[in-house]
Image 1: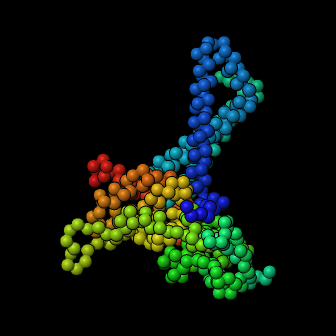
Image 2: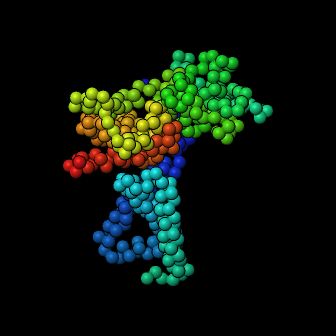
Image 3: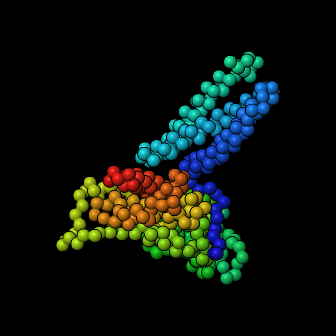
Length: 127
Length: 239
């Protein structure tokens, strides 16, 4: 096998970043899915253990993790829409603008989600 | 260093002598409009006659001098030093292709994949006496994809190619698209066999690296997506 030069620099631009982040966010969502099923399976052992587990999750740092999860899911979902649009022949020539537009939508939804959960952080009970 | 000079860092590797590569730095006098290829010629003629690199037309038509210049795949003959907007130019061979010597890479795997899609007009009928007629509207469909010069800049920039040596790659798929939309071509099914596979057009992950580096500004992703839609219609019996 002949050797080959392997560039340490990441070639490409926004498309490559979107591709890499889509992969990474997919892995995070898959890991969350497994964790979620494991946590929910505690309910099989009765309500006492499950409720105790749920109480330990009622902490700000868990909420921060949840907001991060919302961000990851939003990214994966909106970039997925971008890729599906390419498949039907929409936006291939404007993929960067499409990416920026969809990410802006994602950022707005994320900010609204965070604002919606702030009262809880200030000590109020979640409804 | 005076403004009229710049540093050219050139990738060096001789498989007969070296176990690993290195970069040699050369000071090159800069003149207006100087290209990276001209700078390499300066090094070859004035500094180190052992430097190996490919070139032919010097006019961005043959695709021989595709290299990795300052972090991106470009044609050395088309890249002016001033446009790099840097004090030095680092020149390496096309990434992820087997190295022969210095800036020269083995292109056999790339050419083999280009051949797989039969990049020529296929006809089954008796040829017309004079020529195949094509309307301006039919010809316009080919406009955006006829410029490919087989330089492999897109192929070498594609992360799917890096990880999957069997993948046809963007250049071959653009060629397949170019002939599949040609009103004179009748090789639809033959070409479909080559491209409609796991290692063919479905492997593209729309990373757009190919589009970023193409010296002829071809939109490979658009071509591949078009080929996908036509293939799907054919599979579903709509066309």
